[in-house]
Amino acid sequence: MRIIAGDAKNKRIKSRKGTDTRPTLGSMKESLFSIIAPYVPDSVFLDLFSGSGSISLEALSRGAKRAVMIEKDAEALKYIIENVNNLGYEDRCRAYKNDVLRAIEILGRKGEKFMSLANRKTKLLVAMLSLLLVIPMTNAFAMHIMEGYLPPNYCIIWGVVCIPFLIAGGISMQKQAKKNNKTKILLALAGAFVFILSSLKIPSVTGSCSHPTGTGLGAILFGPSIMSLLGIIVLLFQALLLAHGGLTTLGANTFSMAIAGPFVSFGIYKLCQKLNAPKGLAVFLAATIGDIFTYVVTSCQLALAFPDQNFFASLVKFMGIFAVTQVPIAIAEGILSVMIFNVLAKNCTNELKQLNVI
Image 1 (tube, rainbow, N blue to C red):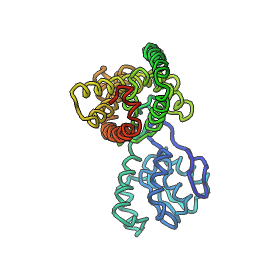
Image 2: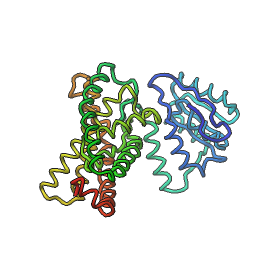
Image 3: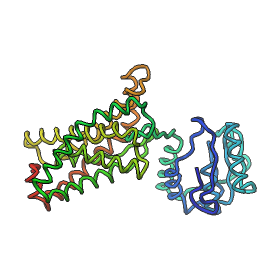
Image 4: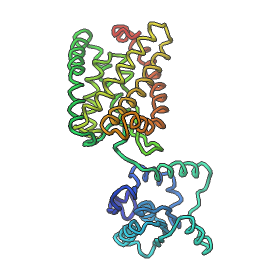
């Protein structure tokens, strides 16, 4: 963990090991300070539930006059003091071992005044982000299952399960390329769409992080078999370049995002076609439900690997972790997929007809 900006930029901050202290993710800290940046210079900064002191030390690095840190855990307080000394901020910091409510009362009696935000909009943004900062964050509960999280036997099983789908995808892709060379551009666009959307990690108030998948649109255009092969290529690049997911969990992530979700999306779109539903509605339902089904499958995978009391209790737990952010994300993905589909229908009509999409 490091200071992001200011005179102490890139200097390390130590934190207590374990889950009792939860250091703020760098992305969260950067978002917070992008909002409050105009108010930080020459301010007096109050850091409640200080933990490692990361937030107030960041403020001091960015020009705050001084900071007051409140932390009731003695072990965490030792790390705060060590971090303050290492950064040379002893003369600008005070760290108190106390309960937050009692500390606020004492500081009030002493006449202490702290940084005040100028308008309601800024206060609301900071309040919402602060809620994310105090919720425990864990990479395990993400739509891409992290490297090394699943037991080896489950990694092997999910990898083996994916093999027939990937073989079918390779055969379908070869046939499609021979049938119509012009669709290669659409295929590349579908892959880029999946890569960009599924790289967007969006934190959840439950402590997980979710992301769109983008695979629904590709399944509509090319079918689920091709999407399975396209999906594993995307997941492989994300694991190698972005540390998003992992090589050991590639099979599990491929099955949930590149196989299960696309098959559901494709099935829903074809059903809507038979029912003569409007194209926009068909695309929206296919992309939205396919996204949600991906998160359901991921929850099942985690529940199988880590049953709590039993599989169903664990499944409810994991689904609850994702649901808060994944449902609105799925709806947003559905809307975006409709917009892109409409552009393609207008500019690539012949190609979509050859693909039997319209």
